[in-house]
Length: 129
Image (tube, rainbow, N blue to C red; front, side, top):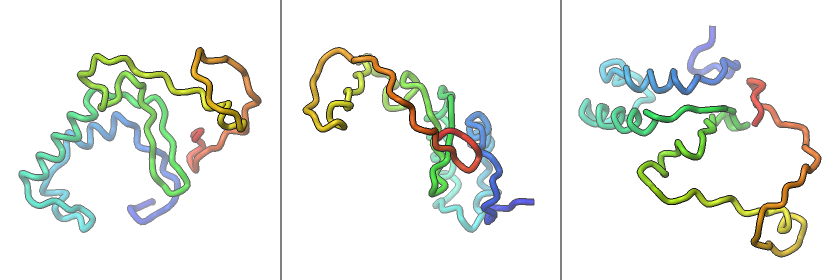
């Protein structure tokens, strides 16, 4: 059975499960964890409330782990916490293909091409990274 120190692949915790863990987090349980660093019960509740509100309306559509073990959740742009309450249009990402090819960037409509796709990298759980 894997424990906290094990590096055996256990899969990535589903985003919904993370939100439930935050919602049901208990200070008495976490204060005895040697890895937990929180000043007191009020600070713990402030922290869990902040995290719960941050993730409340977010649904991850894909998750992957990088080689260092950091998990990334891919969230639709419209659900990004930094855009909540904003009425500004989401800017389009610039087309960097000319720059990558050694030419100057040219603003304008996006050119749709189908470049050859490199082999997909996969994390240790088999997710496309």
